[in-house]
Length: 254
Image 1 (tube, rainbow, N blue to C red):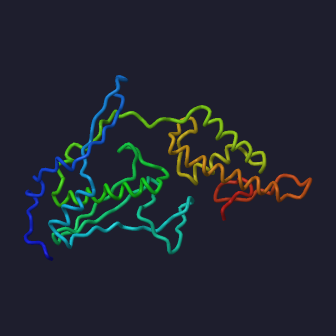
Image 2: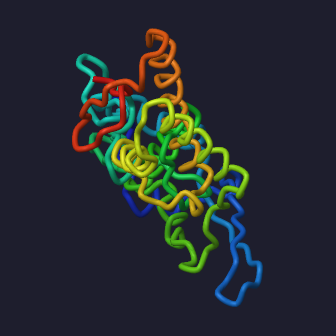
Image 3: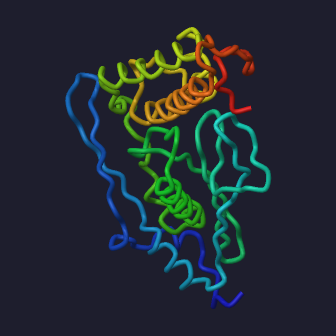
């Protein structure tokens, strides 16, 4: 180790980070329906990295990788990704080794600093890893005081729900699939719920949940159209096949 001396935890904790702190202002509605807002302060990851390296040039960060799973939670052999996919949501894990000591932190991938993202994009994954690095670094003392008030109000408003038009559009897609494959509408819905792990009623979906379900429904529609085109003229509906515990026509990925 090439650092000049070990800086005690308390000294790192008490460092003035005013110039490197950013604010994240969140708006919510209280229980009386009144609009409110609060702000969270957090340390810029680039500043944290700079200070870490100034103190300990040999300090390092490890972004943990995990096996990749498809939408049916089947592991894809030989492929790893910088996040963990679980039925409860997506998480990232980072370890920071600083002044000869390692600290590890987990962080869920969320939006608006509160709500789990059901199908995170690359930007959300990268942002979560940067935030997770800062929190792991904070366990060494640097910027830890910023997290003293990170808890959010319990009555924060829920994410925006989808419109009636969007619910209707999803229903129309499933009706097309049901007719093309001679499959009951409710069976298609049950299949979607099992494979997306989203149990929210369609008329109560938020935008992230809607995006995930709509993507899956469109895959079903495309496969139904493919089945229809492959049928000989005059042939009836395709023979149903079993997919796990559901029957929904020739739409299985298996």
